[in-house]
Image 1 (cartoon, one colour):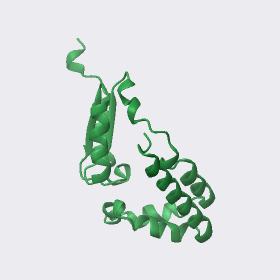
Image 2: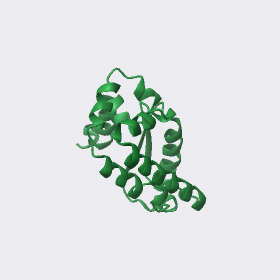
Image 3: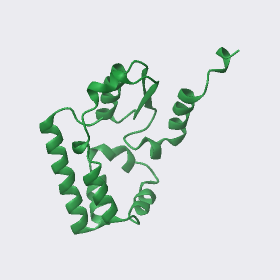
Length: 152
């Protein structure tokens, strides 16, 4: 959806450019150490499989990740908040139960959509797909599966 303010977008694009530069200079392992130290990932760090997930990420392509940080920065995405009311389909906004910043945004986004719904993934933080994949799948299934009681 992008960030709403020009100053906020500029700040975020600059931050993501700095992160990409750090990644290119230091390599993937030191970058990921700093990346996962952010408060956003506290719940992920507490998971028993965190070391395994991080080790898998360390096998990635540092140059490709740096480029993704630059190109996909929320600071470079257009502000689509004003257009959410134009969506003519059901939309499910998801965030982890413990992902406080994004949980607040999903409620706001859902309220702007004509058929918007918000759901929090129980027990999950920011990377809900890693932390609680079964709970996430249940929410998606409930949203996507037809209501069989009302189809007859």
